Image (cartoon, rainbow, N blue to C red):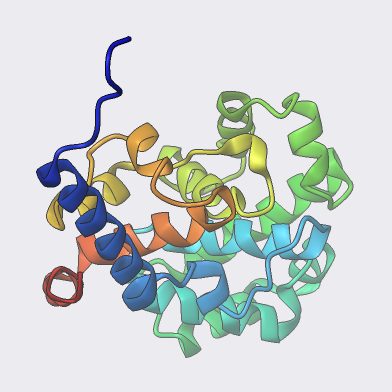
Length: 228
């Protein structure tokens, strides 16, 4: 009988190094943007709506930390549900964005968030789980339906799905261009499929967010590489 092949010392070392590096990625940067915004993401209407608001804000040409603060301000002002966002006046939305220094885009964003609230209530009765149902739990269709919300373009739809894969397993794996760029920066595989094999499914959202943070922060990338 042919002898069973054994991994070479070099391949074993590579696998061990990769596991250490993934551990460093999660330890140093593995906080989802939803969690940073104070959103405890569950498969329920309010958290999913809040994630949509965050995705809308973060997809604009503005620093992610400012978008996260803006989401917090809007939620604290009462916009944590479609009804609550719709009940806020346009000026109240502008003021909440202003408190987070979400400038230049505040007036247009305030208008779009009101329109998003109307669409969420009219089409999905305020429950984005119905969007997943209408999409047949197919990722590409979910992306299409998300893009019907004012202000949610291809980037915003991917951000939503990247974070929502924590509670919508049918989306997995979602690792967008920024996540793939972050993986490349620290020497991890460059495809979503290969990266998804490195972590448990329930950790994919954290892993993807961490890789995005690494892409956006060279110092963080260096720290992760050193740690791993």
